[in-house]
Length: 363
Image (tube, rainbow, N blue to C red; front, side):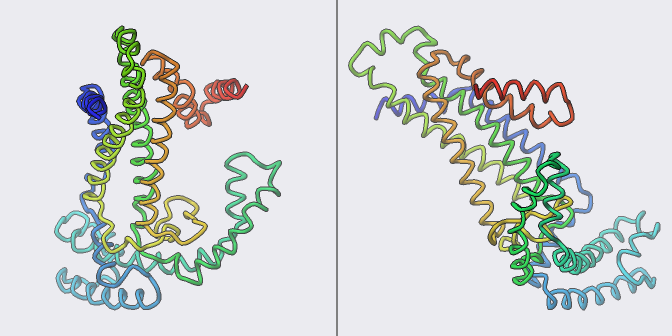
């Protein structure tokens, strides 16, 4: 165990690995910092409403919010000595737009009114939503017109799921409508963290396994009886160090994110809610999944995928006795196709290059 301990210290004290991890955290903070630039941050209003009235935007919820809005509108009109029929109309006034103190009083009312409108829209939207609409969207997006019938048949079971969501009011649970928070957290922050950590962990693994070969001491080390068992110690140290680096980077990133955007009062809202829709189509899960459940699943999947990356990198390092060779092998076979595919749709020559690479890798 002493050797495992020394191998572990060698990894966690590596300046390069520490710097790369800090750079990754800094890049994630840069992405998260976009939320800091909002002069009128209205997200806490959603938290307050969820805590006061609950996260289920049903008829009772709408009725309570409407009564509260009428009272707030009356107080606002008395304060401004005006007779605005609603907060949204008041917001259009140039007098209010040029007065920060008035804006801070009007904006919360506008958000509360928009929540009512969204709750009403949700029922109409999901009542008319069909699996064919979703299938046609993806057929058009991916150019699958020749396989249209097969794709529509695959999407047909979604109709039952949509009906279930409407019956259980899963589609009207409160969330940050219009902020694209779900997309920011999972499509940007966690995905970037996953890709960045995969680079760090491949370097970490190659650095440990090939340490003696890079320093020309392998013949002395592996010629001894104890040295022939060194790879087992390195494997243990690499896995423990990987766990520490993943926890540190992912923990710091998520801490910064949730200090910026609190899910307080809405952890039990559903991912498939209309309030959580970021684009032209909602997020549809095959079974009811709440925000906290989805986050735990995402974190668990991140650990699992990175654990697999570490194992592949370890066994690659055993055969490729050079740290740079291991890194560039992974860059070619794993990271290069991923990044090129993301931009390939807009750049045909790059897309063709990626396809050649992918076909070659399958031969």
